Image (cartoon, rainbow, N blue to C red; front, side, top):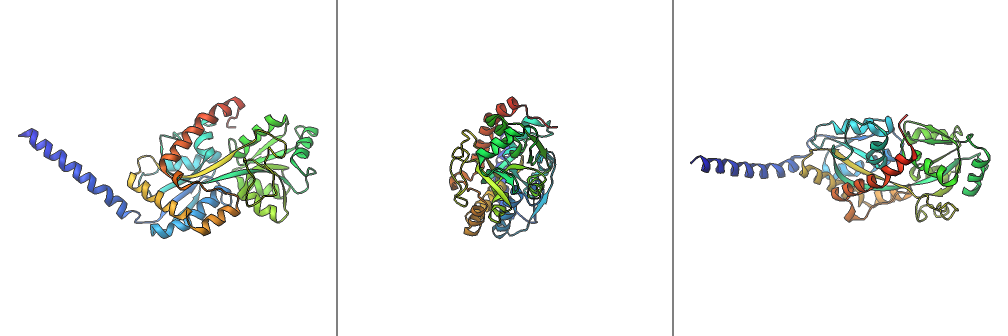
Length: 327
């Protein structure tokens, strides 16, 4: 008799659980959602988050509030999300460096894989080698020659230790046999502002920052770190075309939720993000910034998780061999 009762209780529990999950998705979201951007406002990660969030409001029926929490290469903001309640009301815009590189160079209070639920890949951002307007070099070969003629004198701005700009700079030094000083900032936006002001010599930074200023003639662009030229800036050669082989690096941008966020909520957020990425206006704005969208079949939580793990396997040995550490 007890066994029958236990069976009935277990069966009722299963039915109750299956009924709750759709209800969670149906009721969500009931209030505004906070999207943590782990870098200062005005940078490429911030731009992607704001553009997508603006369109997600339509399908979710709630406001999405961007909160910039900068510092330590994005690990402060991502740490906050890792510790947030897994209810779908706090998510993050994570990028290649925060979800791959940081775990190799920082002692983190969270696990970049185990403490997050992947939601969706948003875009891929190529990097551009860009110099201040007064720099004497007019192409990549001249830039490399100038750096070799002035060892340890030039300055490259980065978004912080372990940022895409920093990793790209270390690889650039290795490939070109050049030496110069890194100047680390709390994000790409303040570093780029100093490049525009002529306070630093050059940067290897996001196309989203470079292209608008390049069109106004405020800076020089020497090469793009992708296999092909950018459709929005066909006049900029690839690094290989400019004479530097093996210098390729793009930075993916994605949404992550705290570990334990219900699958139904993750799926709803994924659907809203995918719907936003399909809007022609969003696609045009991304193209203008040199950002590349992923194919629809790759805009899934599973693919994002696989991409992150694959990049960890690829980049951790490279980063550790290069001796990149948090300062």
